[in-house]
Length: 347
Image (tube, rainbow, N blue to C red; front, top):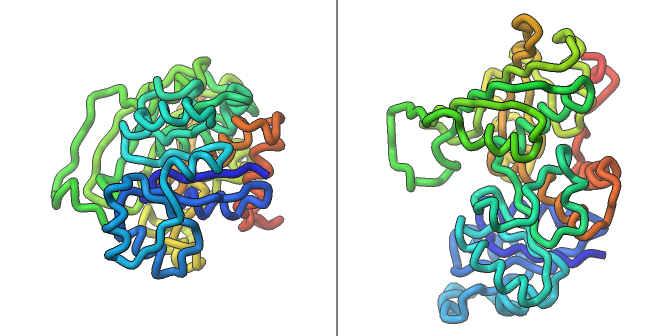
């Protein structure tokens, strides 16, 4: 049984805690944050399912004034764990790394940290083996995590030569105000960092991309133009996508018109926080342009990196040294692919 701690209980941290708690071969020791934020207050009001640790001793009084019990300090949490999932604000994780090293503890960092913080830039499907036994792994961003699933799905089956990526990016997460109120689209310089990150994870694939910020909150939509090494039809590509437990093939005719449709469907399913671990891939968008395969996917940005982070625990601690077994175990406990049926697999 691997003992896991979460440092940073925000948008990602709370979802990591939920995901780890579902893994029957892992134990969530507790979560750690710096103040009684709304997220921490919600944790308390929901019955305090996880032990809470305070990262800043001077803030003990803030928790006491809010009536929220503290189990211990950041240092005490780290001491009790085999591995830490650091989901703190970008830059804080890099500072925390020095303490993890001093205690000989493994840690996994989220996409906001610089690549230099880790031994390996990690993705469960694309380079699991490179993470085996490493002390420090860093996850890709939500966008990169999602489209690597689709690209690696094709790459493992027929090989991929290159890919062109356009990201239609939500401007902020639901409930955030720091980006302000806006009525505009904003274009970043090409190539975007996500396609550069893809080439770091999968150096054999040439990639370029454009990113457009949009004033919405419920997910990103990404279009990809993939040049496979072996010519395949849209129907063959769809069949491959349907076999992947972290990709859900949907269609406009079913009512999945866009990002809001996916968010509403997750809510109607009763998914906690309306989260979905899988990306959605529109069947209606799988088309060919010469040899190239084009398609569009939806990225549930708040939750999509959770499965790959749990894969990273398995690789770093060598719980499973075989990539297929590792991701399969994660998928099993998270319920990935539970929507599948014979009819679904037939398309």
